[in-house]
Figure 1 (tube, rainbow, N blue to C red):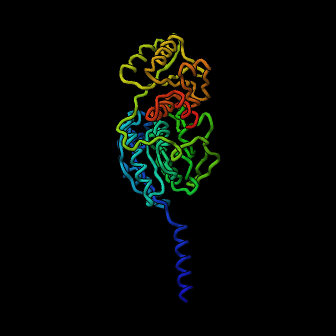
Figure 2 (cartoon, helix red, strand yellow; figure 1 turned 90 degrees about the vertical axis):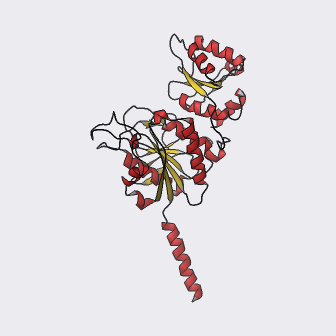
Figure 3 (cartoon, rainbow, N blue to C red; figure 1 turned 135 degrees about the vertical axis):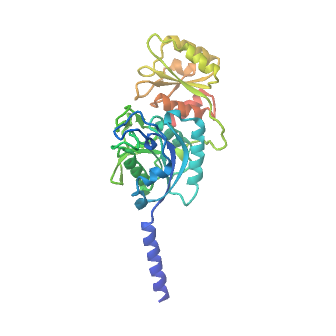
Length: 349
C-alpha cells in the first residue's frame, strides 16, 4: 500500500512537472512597443519609450496562460539613443537572472532601430544556454494596428519553449525567429522590416507554437570568449562611410582625436574604399594608431581582403554589416589590438 501511495505521488509529480509553466522575465528598454501617439491612426510621430513594463504585460493577459511572468524596467528610451552603459547594464542583468534556477528564459522589449546591435552584443556576452529573445514593434502601442502585443506573446512563447535552448540570442518579430547575428532592419516603417539577408530566418511562430527550420553555425554565448563583467566602458569604435569623391579623411581624423581605438569602414561593393580615404587609413595602420575593419554598405555578402590588405593590417568584417562589425570590434579590442587575432574573432563569431 505504501509503495502504491508513493508511486501515485511520483506520477503526480512528473505530471505536474510536465505541465509546469516556464518562468520568464521580461526586461523592458523602451522603444516603439512602449510608444504613444496622439491619434489611434498614427504610426509615425509618436513618443517611443513612454509606457512602462507593467502596461505592456497587462496589455497581453494571455501571457499568464503560457508562463509565469515577471518584469523589470531597465531603460525606457528610443533605441536610436541606445548607449554602451545600457548594454552593459542589460548584459549583467541577463547573466545574473539566467544564473538562477528559477529563471527559464528572458524576453527583452526593445526599439527596432538598434535592436540588431543589442541582440548581437548580447549574443557575444551572455553566458548561458537558456533562451534570450528580443522583440519590439514597428507601430506604437496606441495604434489600432499595433503589432507589439502579438510580438510580445510570441517572444514569451519562444523563450519558454524547451527547444529554444542553445540557439544563441534570438529576435522574435512578425511571427518569425531570427538569429541575433544575422538579423537586420531593412525597411523604415513596414512591419516586415526584419530580414536575415545572408541566411534567412531560423524559424517561425504560429499561435504561440514554435517551429525551427535551421540554426546559425557561428559560435555564441557560452562559446564566446567575451565577458563584460566588471567592465565600466567599452573601447571606442566608430563607423566611417565611403562614397564617390570621398572626403572623409577629416571624419577619420575627428574620430581619432576623439579617442577611437578602432574604425569600421562601410565600403562600397565588396568593401572597396575610395583611395582618398584608404591611403590615409594605410598610413594610420602603419603607425598602429587604430584598428580598421572593412565592411560593406551593400547590406549582405562577404568582404574579401587582398594579400596586400592583410599585410597592411586591414581586417575583413566577414559578412557582418557595419553596425554589427562595430559591436564585434569593440569586444575584440577588450582582448587584443592585434589585427591577426581580431580577424580570427570575425571568422568565428
